[in-house]
Every structure is written in C-alpha cells, then in structure tokens.
Image 1 (cartoon, rainbow, N blue to C red):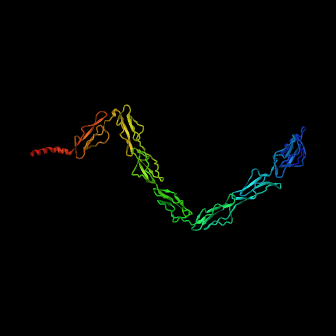
Image 2 (cartoon, rainbow, N blue to C red):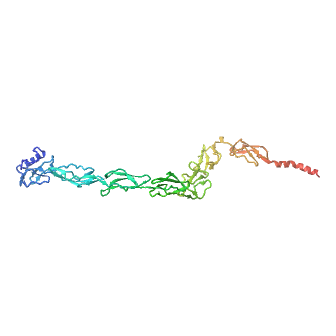
Amino acid sequence: MGTGTDTGMGTGTDTGVGLLWLCAVLLALPGAWGDCQDVPRFSFAEPSGPTNKSYPVGSWVRYKCRPGYTGVSSKSPLVVCLPNSTWASDPDFCIGKLCREPDIENGKFHYSTDLRFGATINFTCNFGYRLVGQPSAQCILNNNEVIWDNTPFCEIIPCEPPPVIANGQFSGTQTEYTFGLAVTYTCGEGFSLIGSSTIYCTVDSESNGVWSGPAPECKVVTCENPVVENGKKLTGFVEQYTYGDTVTFECLPGYFMNGSHTVKCGADNAWNPPLPKCDQRYCGHPPSIPFAELMGTVSSSSPAGTTVTYRCSPGYAAGGGTSLEVTCLGNTSWSVSSKSCTRQQCTPPKIQNGFVKGEDFLFGTTVEFSCRDGYVLQGSSSAKCVASGNGVRWDVSLPTCKTAGQLTVLCGEPPAVANGRHNGTKGEFVHGSIVVYKCNHGFTLAGGSSIRCTARDELHGVWSTPTPECRGGATTIIVGILPLLLALLVMSF
C-alpha cells in the first residue's frame, strides 16, 4: 500500500478518489517534507489491506466499510498523509445499514434517531392491548445484514365472563370476552331492571381486563299513585307506576310550587325527589305607582297570581292606554309594571301671523299668544292644557291674529235669567247673533223674548237690553183678584 496503490473499495474513476490522488501527487513533488505514522482507526471502516508503520507525505490508504456499514457514494474511502504528518479523510464515509421498519399490529414503535445499525427502538400497544415480548429492540448484524434482535406483538386484553344476575340474563354466549365487547341484560316479566342495562369489557390502570360497571339488578318495583294537594298532573297518567316512571305537576292558580315539578319512581319504591307541595303565597298591599290609582277594591293581602289594575290620573297615560297591571308573584313580591303614567301632551298650538310662548305642551302647561306687528289678537291671550276624558285639550278656543279690516265683534255668553233659559251655546257670539229665551213651566216671560249681539266699539260687542224676565204665575193671580176682595168687604158693611 503506498502512493498510487489501489487495494480497497471504489474505482479509479471516482471523483473523490481522483481529487485525493491529485493532492497526494502534488504533495510528493520535490520540496515536500515529513511523514505520517500509523493509519487512523474508525469504528465504521478498516484498511482494505496490510498497513505500514509510517508513510511518506502524499501517500494514501484505501479503507473498506466494516460489517453492518455501507459506503456513501458521494464520499471517498481514501485517507491521505498531509505535509504536517497528519491523515486527512472525508468524515463518515461509511454509515450504518438501515433496518426495515418493524411491523407491530395494534401497536407502535418509537425512536429518537434513525433506524440504522446500532439504533434502539421502543414498543407500545394500543389501548385495550398489552405487549407480549421485550419492550425494546436493537438493529444488529446478522450474516452481514442488519435486523431487529426482537419483535414483540400486542394481544387483546381479555375479561372474565360477565356476572350472572337473578331474574334476568345477558345477551350472547361468547366463550371469550375481550376488550370492547359489550353485553346487554334483560329482566324476566314483572321485574324492573335497576342500573345500566349494558356493560362492556375495558381495562384498568394496570392493563387488566375489567367490566365497565356492576351488573344491574332485576327487582319488582311499585310506587303509589302520586297526589299533590292544590296541584294537578300534567304527565304520567297510568294505572300502576313502576321503576323509571315519571310524573310532572303544576299548582292551581294562586298556589306556588315548593319542590320539583317532576318526580321519578325509584328502585326503593318511592318517588324521587319527594312529591312537591303547592303552598298559597300572599303579597302585601299593591305598590304605589306615580300618577296612578288602583281600580276597584283591593285587599291588603293578595294570593299569588292575583292581578290588580291601575288607572292613570287625569292628564296622564301609560303606553298604549290609560291603565296598567301588576301581578302577585310566587315569591310574595309584586311584578314591576312595564309601563308608567306620563303626562299627556296637547296638540301643539299654531297661530297664523302670531307667536306661541311656552316650553312644552304637556298637561298643566299654560302658553301665551301674541301677534306680529300690524295684527290684533282676537280671542284669549293664553290657554292651559287640561284633562278631557281620557285625553287632554286646550281649555279655550285658540285665538286668531287679524288686521283691523278683518276684526270680528264678539259678544260673551248671553246673560242668564232666573227660572228660564236661552237657546244659545257656550262660548263667544259674533255680531248680529240672536238668542231666544224661554221660561220654565209655571213662569211667564215678561218683556221681549230675545236679545241681539250689538257692537259697543270696533273690538267688543254687547247684548241688547232689556234682558227678558220669567215671572211666577201665582203673583199675577193675587194682583188681579185683590180689587174684587176689597169690593166684597165694603158691601158687607
């Protein structure tokens, strides 16, 4: 083995070999110095032939891969002696051979490196299975090939046969019961199944096969007909109640339920939870609501479910009307009304050629009227928003603003007479209006029967005079018969 000698793996045409050989030739030229001692040792490769104690600069030695390793095609297996008396080589020009991935049904293998010669892997099984064999394996050499030294397998975990129960049986007649297998129990006629009807084979923390729960029981269960005083059933109308039957109740109006609305017939032949009670609850006096008053007679103690009605005070209204309601609740408090009584608003007044002075037009508000320059106010100078039935209105007719040529003389209401009446209406009367008087039964009209609205000046009117009178009939008779009575008295003397 020496310069130019090829006694190991690879070919003379290999690119890496050519480069190293060229390097060795250059180093062997005159002027090169030093030599190299024993060839280096590698865990993955060894010299392909005998070696020397020392080598001149530029010498190269070919290596071959040890058993279990294979060469890397892109790297050279040559080791070259350098002028500084050290050996140079490509790193890791041989690598471990690959073991095939192990096939483990119902399990997995885990590794932290690759699967090459010398690697170690660990095995685990899927849930419901347990490992049979060693939990780990190593990639080892076997006849110049690599294999895993151990391959375990995963077997399904078995359970003991399911428990036998009295007055019942389970489905299936398996000879083996393994993980995931389920059995279902049924009871004989007249017996109720208490517990879960189905159990299945599973595993505990130590990977032992166990059943998911205890086997159910088969019992005779009968519950009494449930009766709730002051209440009634909504569901569960059967002749006889047995295990699992449910009944739902509600209380009669005015009563409040204390307990669960729904009960179930239990394995102990009793209703669970216990039957509820319907207790009568009472509320105190209904609450005061601003600007509203209660309608009708209301007691200071009202049973739950009672509804009372309020009426808004005149000039006030609730949303959508003038009444609202509250109800006595089961917790002995009155419900909160979703409405409230608020002040109503009069129609905003509008005066042509005039002004309206006022902040708002709500009930109780007074507004003032005035006219533009050149116009005269005819009618009331103010108006107040007052209650009227279920609503509100202005207490007077709205005035008008007119020029001097448009003014209308108005008279107030005609004077009233004792024991009589006129045919006029309330309000003001225009110039020229005539009203006629008529006396009540038993009274006689004295003077003219009518009066007329006449002008006092260009703005004001007055009623004509005199105003008719209604005189009593008895006074007239006495006045007419008095002379006759005097004549009879003289004759008697």
